[in-house]
Length: 111
Image 1 (tube, rainbow, N blue to C red):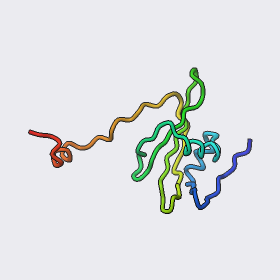
Image 2 (cartoon, rainbow, N blue to C red; image 1 turned 135 degrees about the horizontal axis):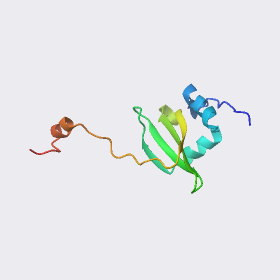
Image 3 (spheres, one colour; image 1 turned 90 degrees about the vertical axis):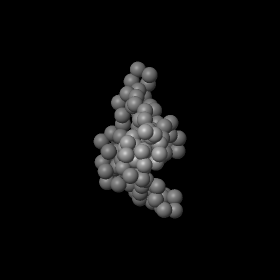
Image 4 (cartoon, rainbow, N blue to C red; image 1 turned 120 degrees about the vertical axis):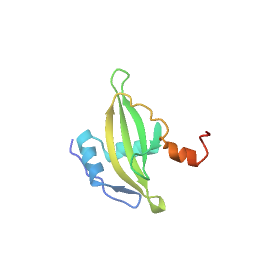
């Protein structure tokens, strides 16, 4: 199967990194759009201003997940930053840790 490079449109913008990852993991543009339209889990992305979403696939014996990190741009456009295939079931991330000094400043910690 020949890999097709996705084209930038009024709705989607693809980074070179995302295209390279799509090729590496054998992910198509259509597959990633299905993840966008029906994510099973949504988290804050590790890069500022991004969102990470996931959709399960595979079997019970051999589960995998497809992850996609994107950024919302102006006028509803979505920039696909990266995509990857996670072997197995990924751990659910906890809340983002807030430094102690910030919590004290906000009055969350009482002496």
